[in-house]
Amino acid sequence: MSKDIKHVGVFCSGGDAPGMNAAIRAVVRTCAHNDLHVHGIYNGYEGLIEGDIARLETRDVANIMHKGGTVLKTARSERFRTKAGRKAAYETILAHDLDAIIAIGGNGTMTGAKIFEEEFGIPFIGIPGTIDNDLFGTDYTIGFDTAVNTAIEAVDKIRDTADSHNRLFFIEVMGRHSGYIALYTGIGSGAGGILIPEIGTDVDELMTVLQKMMKRKKLFGLIIVAEGNENGTCQEVADLVARELTNYEVKVAVIGHLQRGGSPTAMDRILASRMGYGAVTGLLNGISKVMCGVHNNEVVYVPIKDAIKKKKDIEKELLELAEILSM
Ligand code: F6P
Image (cartoon, rainbow, N blue to C red):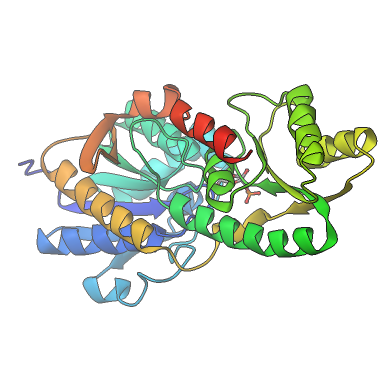
């Protein structure tokens, strides 16, 4: 066990994700259990630069498990990208005697922590918190399950009106560079088509699918499009299809930030609790420069360079399944 770690800083950075509060709670309470002091840093790396930091006790994280968003707030920091910004952040670390940090967020958050460690030698562990589920080495990231459930609920509602009016809906879900939300939402809502960046949009293929649908006298349709779809936005693809397939009345719906809010699902609460606990015990065991993930239902520590650089592949089996079931 490392004797050096007595004061731990925890923050969230990047886009919020439902379940981040459960992770914060787990970090604070696991630290308390091990007689460590925890400091909550507000607004991510911005708060580290500004010294926006406060001691967190066990009772401070009561009654937050079920809440969406993050009680520590979050931000995307441009200043932390600069050396001067990182130096200011290091001053905060020194002023508060922090021995290690736990950073909850996505790819940008992990990258920031890695650079910070390289420059100033601050041990850290990352916790994957992003609805996009795009970090390598963990099966799921915190917030993904909740976001997919929210998106499916929205698509179910769109299905009702699409069916009543015989309309073809193109529905955009989040995922800047990742098709995970689109794929899982598409399968879970029984969509007719799914367009994701990982496999590119083959509009000709989509047309064939839609023409087959028309031949089968399927009068309405739901196509899920990932925000990061590479060959056109949801609106662009819908416009293109509307020009070619004049029998269908085409509509577009963008689910947007609805997917980022709301009370986390049981899966996200438990995942986040395991990761928060895993991050603290990892630090106590002298582990650093890793992301604490869950793979095959076991807590794992993924080298940070792998988590941010290696590509998380979309499961081929799911792609095939989605295609077969959409017929
Ligand atoms: O957090 C991930 C994410 O929700 C992406 O799916 C999306 O592209 C992006 O954040 C939106 O970010 P912002 O809320 O800053 O517009």
